[in-house]
Image (cartoon, rainbow, N blue to C red; front, side, top):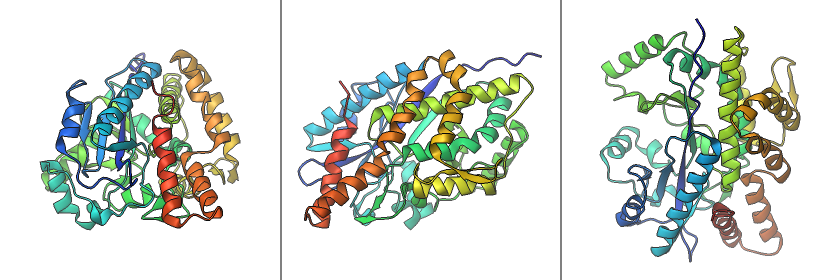
Length: 380
């Protein structure tokens, strides 16, 4: 039987932090009216509160192309920025605020978040982090589970391109994505489990829900997971990128990688599945170094410069990028590599300010200024 090609639709969700435009401090008391005002101007559910009051989430509709998703994402960013400005705030599309303290934050009074705060305690209270999630439409349940196991190999490569969280509570952490260190304190995070079938995955879910461990599949927070709400495979590992074109590039790469893996399956081939133990090492290297120190090529058994790995990926997905009309978007990855990720730019601005005599807090405020500017750069 011929394998039916998935729809390969795409949807992108981003989480932003709201900062005081004057002090550059993270907002602590955000009026509920701010989110409501945003919601009145878009389709229901496209702008929503997040776990902490200082966070806000946006999500595109189901889009047929990457270009459509990028245009809608830009519209949502501009909308949030315009409304937030009316309240004296600015959104920053970044995974950690450079100097905010999680102990001063308040969580949103919503049943789901109240349960999370109650169950996870201090682990949840530390979740002063934001991410980007990309949904790709794969209607077939079995194919979705099969591709989840294969695409996990590439997740560290995509994380490395997205890194935007080098600071935590005013300290330079030495990690390019400190966000993952915070998020990994939650249960059911990290690389996904491997399942031989969708029914096996469902059986595991039934055991966990019957035992009262989770209410539903939305409480599984793997780096990539079958969405609990949509017939999509949802990637959750990237940091959110201040520059919108960087985030769109990473979403496009993920989309094309899934289509490439589908093509292999259609031709009775598949990507080699490596153990989670090995992939975790690349995940750590991406978290620690971003794109600067390379990742392991498990076939060769050695660390390879990231540029070489990126060129291999771009070659692998070239035909898919052409078919999905997103060649320019995926090839933007070379620009990210040359220019550096947000984490690189944040560190550069901070160290330059310190070298010029700025106190640490003022240097960190300079980083926030950079993030405010970049989060709206190029958006009409």
